[in-house]
Each structure stands twice: as C-alpha cells, then as structure tokens.
Image 1 (cartoon, rainbow, N blue to C red):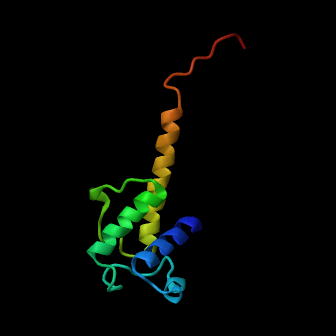
Image 2 (cartoon, rainbow, N blue to C red; image 1 turned 30 degrees about the vertical axis):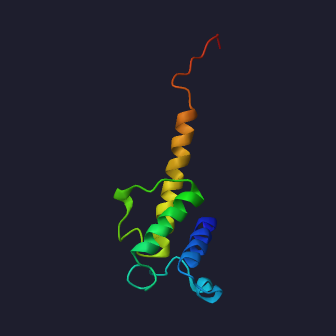
Image 3 (cartoon, rainbow, N blue to C red; image 1 turned 180 degrees about the vertical axis):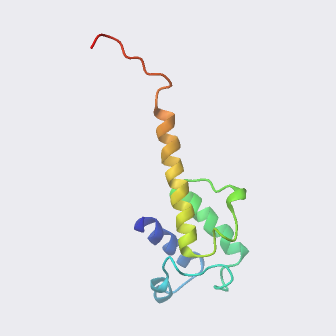
Length: 105
C-alpha cells in the first residue's frame, strides 16, 4: 500500500526533523537502525506512538525488534500486517456465531 508507505515516510521525516529533500530520498529500501544517527531509542518510541495514533493500532512490546525497524520497508510491512489483522478481527467480530436457514428450497 503506497499510502501506508508515504504516511510512514512523512512520520519519520517529522520525527527525525528531515528536510523536504531528505524526505524525498526516502523509500522502502532506506535503512533506519544503525544508518540514520537521529534514529535513536527516543525516535523509535516516537515512531511507535505516531504509528499507533495514525493507524489506530496497538504495537505490542513483543513485536518491537531490530528487524521491524531495519528499513522503511520492514516497518511498512509490519504496519500493513497489523492493519490487515485489524480488518480481519473487525470482520470476524461482526459475523453472527450461528446462521440458521429456514424454509424449503
């Protein structure tokens, strides 16, 4: 989803105080952890909070790993998985537990 990628890039650029030029250079292949000096533990916490608020999802402590924050793409993939799970859970919660069909065919 391009929209998710663009929203995450915008969020990262805001948190890291990137210039418009730096933001324009970011894509799914942009390395984060260990490559961007500004991307420290405080930035990670800010990104997590921003993602939770922006996408109305909850990021569990167990999901926070170096792999998730390795690149923009890995972060986008994680958020897309959480969004898909949220939609699936929402859909399943709306289904009736039992469907009864009556009448003759």
